Image (cartoon, rainbow, N blue to C red):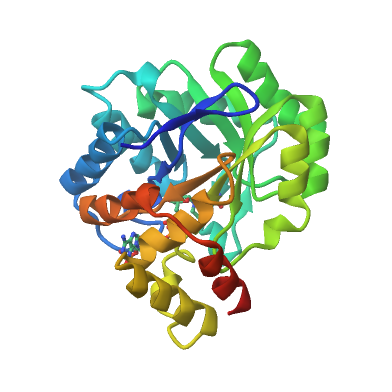
Length: 285
Ligand SMILES: NC(=O)c1ccc[n+]([C@@H]2O[C@H](COP(=O)([O-])OP(=O)(O)OC[C@H]3O[C@@H](n4cnc5c(N)ncnc54)[C@H](OP(=O)(O)O)[C@@H]3O)[C@@H](O)[C@H]2O)c1
């Protein structure tokens, strides 16, 4: 069973979150089976995961409708919905357009609340910060949504330490969503120490290298991950997620499953113990 931990800012979150992006078509181009996607969300909730990570642009709103369908027989108040808004196109491939300022945010949240069939969003996050708009205006507009009761907490996604600090002064930031994995520990330089100083937890995406961990098999680090996983008789996915869990309970890895089988496999990471020897062999590689 996935445990819950209370974060420094009082949020009660499961050790792992479910990344819902790949449960809808269009972000990745791979067709999906809706029944399987719903079963995956149910499996996550039944296993103790309470954090569902989505975006209004995942499947152009399909992902939110999928979550609404999945939550029909569940207690919505026990689920923590983390929602990014205001971008178009593929964020990870660049060339996307961002519209996160005050002009359209009310329109976006109204549409999201409707698609999700909920009265409030637990965590509302601009998908990226538009540096062409004063930060006070972007965060201020979401803060108004908090005052109006539509949003409980404000989060950020893929920001640097400076933006995190400045935003936190405008309105407390509850969670920051960052690319963070065994193959990409960039945030350990500045962002993570800053988040820790401010008491902000990190939800980590791309734990399997955005799915690429299983492809670059000639890389020495990837080779070592495969070797250690085989020695421990666990899957590479379990190893990669266990690695993130070992970073501290303020790091919440988002499990990017496409189906129930992948989720069932990955969540077994919670019972994987990593030794000092594992750490030094990975660091060396
Ligand atoms: N804030 C942001 O900018 C941002 C960006 C990207 C994602 N996200 C969020 O983070 C979540 C996770 O990201 P992600 O899905 O791109 O990253 P990921 O976890 O690195 O990759 C997930 C992919 O790895 C493969 N996989 C998953 N479990 C597996 C298993 N047990 N065994 C073998 N292969 C497995 C699947 O690909 P195949 O089925 O193709 O093998 C799956 O689609 C997303 O759902 C989304 O909610 C946020």
